[in-house]
Image 1 (cartoon, rainbow, N blue to C red):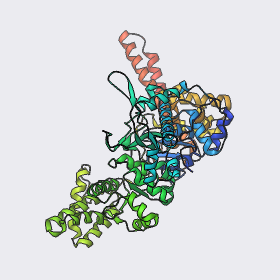
Image 2: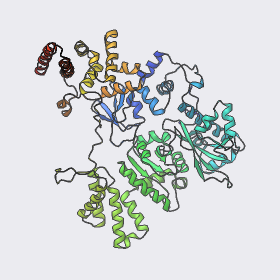
Image 3: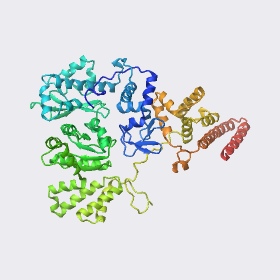
Image 4: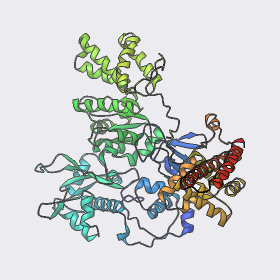
Length: 630
């Protein structure tokens, strides 16, 4: 059961110094693909898995995970590392907390010696402040006389004690500084409460609680940590709005959070469909009734970031907003945005006067699921909205309605899917497909990139980048030959490593980062007689070096275009090494020739003997010719 006191939502997470053997045990028990797949929708591609990067916004996957090497790398934002690095980056926690989180998942018991709270990072302090506030509000609700009215309100909405506990619902007392005083007693500083949006400052320098006399809804990150709160007014004389939310903080951005996703993500993944509702009560009523693959936009307009977050679990979406005009307008906006993000979108048409909360409380989950089975396509939903306004009574109204539907179809990235929908509209409204295609092209051309001269007359789809391929920007920061040599070294094949270090000095690497990594690998080879990329990755604390190791390890070799084009997974390592070494040797000879020519010119200007430089030039040119023959 996922609830207020389960796992580590509100439980204190102790920070400890963990023995190395325990860290190794946790690492070996944590499969990186399983861990990342619980947060990112991964697809098998060759030996690796790919998906949309959780660390930056992207529409084409550039995030790769290797089960074999137990590492990940994003070729877009260049973040990479092992399973600990991922948890640290994704959950914004320290190394110790990442180990503890994975240990809990793997059922491994760790020591509990505490580290002073002063060593917490700022992000951890904000999480701690929100965790404390969640417990404080829950205790207010369940253990105080003042909170009884809020508890009765929740019960009147049909929420059971189990739902209240599971979602950590609470109550903020009417006192101006109840949370502030309790926080100071618990060792939560005033500054932490301010940064977490729980306390505010007056002009005279005093402070007061932001939430007062309200029913509280904790907002969870997908990791199960409380990051913010929504609050509903309980008193008519409350001057603020019906609902207020926490302000944005370093751990909370409302446009990137979906209420309830932490609780529902497993169900969404299992059902391969998500229901999107608007409010807290809508979600809680559905979830309690057994419809658990549901999330809420929490009263804000649906955003692209929220859809990208949801896409990690499913690309099938049913919008379930209120039947009133405001709800219909929100649904229309959500439809277009979801289509643009490549979702399979349907709309559940609720009866007039109902919202998801009232419908499921009156009719139950079984009837809701029946209604869901009758969910309409976005075409039918849009058409119904125009019919309600009488648009289909005139030719002008019909053209406006069809034009709006085609505009939505233009949001789709999949050309084949667009064509099927155009055909459906043509049949439904008895319009020539050619007319609809001209209208479609008009909308597509607004976003289509400029056409190159000589590209031919064939129509090219706007969105023709397959989502099944990893996009790897070719930045060229490290020369191809140096990248390939480092990749070979990281592969650790003894005869190849020996070949490289016998024919190459670290000084021959032009890129300073490449040189640094080469020195590290050479040191390991000299001291241990072996090189293992996973071990190197696990033993370095340098974020840049981790990113470089994962980048190179999960990239293809760059020198032979033939291997890349033919998608050959196992090119000849010895040949790649020979080619890369030859290129580095050639580059070194070119540099030596340029330097010798400079010295020859200076000797001539001084009237010195030029012959040594002439002889040197001839020898260097001979070596260059030999290298070109090899």
